[in-house]
Amino acid sequence: MKVSVIGSGYVGSVTAACFAEVGHEVICVDIDRKKTEQINAGIPPIYEEGLGELLQKYAGKKLIAITDYELAVKETEISFICVGTPSADDGTIDLSIVRAAAASIGKALAKKDAYHVVVVKSTVVPETTEKFVLPILEETSGKKAGKDFGVAMNPEFLREGKAVQDFMNPDKIVVGAIDKRSGDLVSELYRTFECEVTRTGPATAEMIKYANNSLLATKISFANEIGNICKKMGIDTYEVMEAVGKDFRVSPKFLNSGAGFGGSCFPKDVKALIGKAKTIGYSPVLLESVIAVNEKQPLLMTEILQRKIGNPADKKIAVLGLAFKNETDDIRESRSIPVIAELLRLGAKVSAYDPMAAENMKRIFPSIEYCDNASDALKDADACLVMTEWDEFRDLDSEFQNMKEKIIIDGRRIIKAKNIDYEGLCW
Ligand code: NAD
Image (cartoon, rainbow, N blue to C red):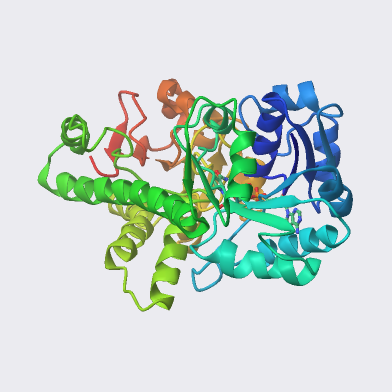
């Protein structure tokens, strides 16, 4: 089939490359010309394991990237909207990018005679596809949904860092469509996948994504709260959660206590669902607590630091790990951001190291010291805060010996070194 993918970020570039891998012809559309040039040259616009190989294989052949909506819509049968849906200042969802993408597709649809399906893959709050995107498409195209074009919602559940693997081996595919014809065409795209397609209406598909992410975020904040209580009582929360996770109703995933969740999805999606719930007159106390625990958690790192070294003003504090999790260069909502902000507020000098995410973090904190390796960041430091569970941090040992004070506060339970003054966030 012929597919256009609107937006070439984490979700769009992976969706495009994976659709090419299963045999479809793909046109990527992005307003950022540099990204389209990178994709056409076989260079991934973001880091994602396996993405480079797929782009090398298909770029310029079954996969091309352009900035021209009209051509992309004309040449394909289905368009996937994969643009960002950030949080607005009040935490609710900001749909301005979705609005722009939908309007551009609509204008292109106005010039196309054949039937076309528009699929929302961006994470959007329930009712957005039918009550927001569909009317924009009708207005800008002058056509009728359900007759001249189809509309569907197909949420994405991939994990950053393992996005290609997750896209190719999904444990669920959800297609929520306004009618059978739209749903059939989108499901047909996934024909070669072993996973069954769950067919729903658009609002249900939208809510499945939010319920999914909110439950995972809840597990993390729950584990962190238990971890905070355990620490005060001298109980090892990891021992507790390992046993709890053996219950098949719970599962051992997302029960590691630590500095909290970040990334482009969990914080923003839980906040968006809170915002949506409030607009319909419901007070989501559980979800609000999930966010409250998550916001408090990283600041416990600097509280421990102050207890151990006193005022960190003018002291050198090494921060290991900037990405919101390992195996990604993504720093969005990374828990290291509030930690570095607090260190700077307290007057500390920050030296930071991350295997992949330093370039991205420079945009937020241009003036801290970025090091090429952990050893340089740790040299002469008065303390070290570990914020991301990068595998290479497990092997750190002699590097700590070059610190002025060998004080290590671990937010991810990853440090194994001996002969250091070690304290875990919740253990
Ligand atoms: P992103 O910011 O990495 O990528 C968005 C892309 O859209 C960028 O390349 C940008 O240049 C492009 N863009 C912006 N305006 C455009 C326009 N008018 N027309 C065409 N392109 C435009 O975002 P992302 O992380 O890929 O997320 C996209 C959506 O998928 C969001 O709703 C997100 O919540 C959801 N999602 C993300 C993940 C994830 O792990 N990142 C997982 C599941 C779902």
